[in-house]
Image 1: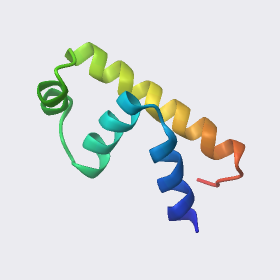
Image 2: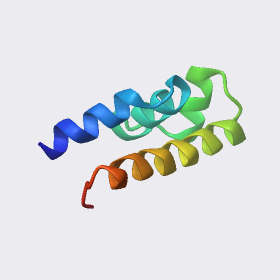
Image 3: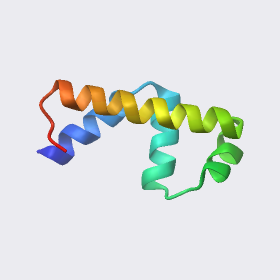
Length: 67
């Protein structure tokens, strides 16, 4: 159930957040590699990843997900 909720919240993120999050955590790629793949600057990639983490955490906490 927890995995399903996590998956649903990842899929619900806006596209650029979802993209960097999946590449970083599930693709096990570096910031540099993600930057190369997405054509985002390194600083933009870091910002997107940070915002994606924050948004995902907020969404999960709002639904009672426990870390």
